[in-house]
Image 1 (cartoon, rainbow, N blue to C red):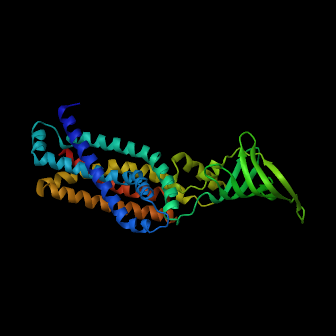
Image 2 (image 1 turned 90 degrees about the vertical axis):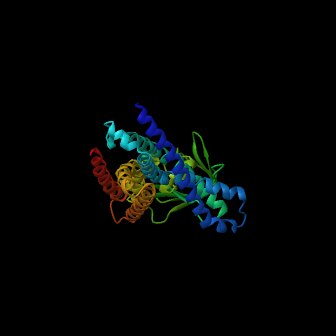
Image 3 (image 1 turned 135 degrees about the horizontal axis):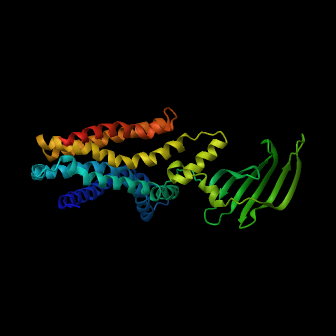
Length: 362
């Protein structure tokens, strides 16, 4: 790596980390100003609980703000190089503007790859924990451990549908369980209601205080009561809770599984498909916005100085995320295809950025 490359990369990295910290801090401040008074007014709210609530937002905040930080750091880095006449010196030495910006583009690509990993590890994990924090502090969000619907699937038998009134997150004990066992033609064969159930490894669900209704094609079902009934399924209580997660709480593997499961039963999978596409589109925007920012930084730097470049970065980033937020909303509303919802902004800005970036040859 040339000395100039290391110099540009070091300058970009410092600007990126500083920009990311500043933008994330501003987002957190806005979130605090918007919700702190409401959280403090909740019964049982504690200082540690409120702090935990905001800390759990950080992975999602970083995931959404890093592309803007990539744009801002690209424009500031080039603005500083121009302000110090270092761009002029490099061009005099035969180094094109495109070659000068290459380390920043590679760094932006690395940021995109890092965001992809973040979006499929800490972000869904933080969102799941954030839901729990909201349950504790706000008492407004539906608890996914209540009124759970689940389909137990096995290729050797028809699906079994279960409805659970309450799943204990810690012990896995279930309360208010209703089991619907179907025939190969999907007609109801047996309905069992249990006061409680417990999963036992290697056995399945042990249901207690059970009332069973056997249909078997009869006009009047046969009723019986049992103290204990074993339902031989391999699904664990954690699987029941996982199936109730919102799309933003799932990693890619869980999203793919949920899409297959939802489609199998003819249900709407739009929100899951849009979320899956956005897990690729949003990280890539760090690279795309860097491509947009590089030529924009050169033009204002020649005429209006560094402040104009920073202002331009803020405007471009703001416009970009308004567009992507609107398209994601349209996609989740099933008004446009999932790929268009996630990728339209990237396609438009990517074409503009690539076209402008190629002009740096001159």
